[in-house]
Length: 75
Figure 1 (cartoon, rainbow, N blue to C red):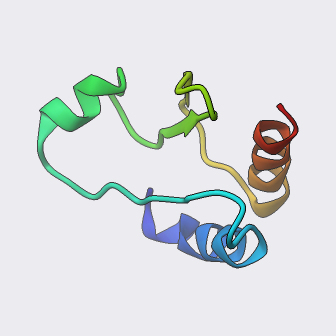
Figure 2: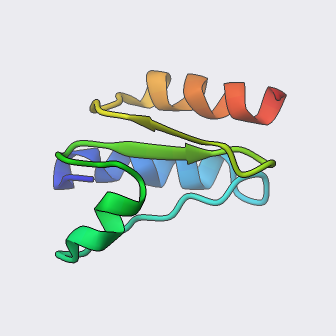
Figure 3: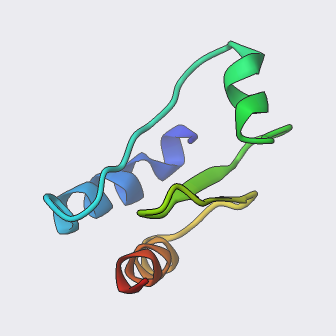
């Protein structure tokens, strides 16, 4: 996540508090990114209740991030 995305993430953390976990991974350890198949940034890893990981290589505005989170909650 870049600095420009921080306000979007903060808004999501506030809106979905108690419903989902939003974790920012800030590391220079390539093995962490490799675990999720992330070769480049920006990237988001969405993990549903059964542990299925969906990685998307994109920057999200607030509406798109909320839509993506709502999809996860609905499943």
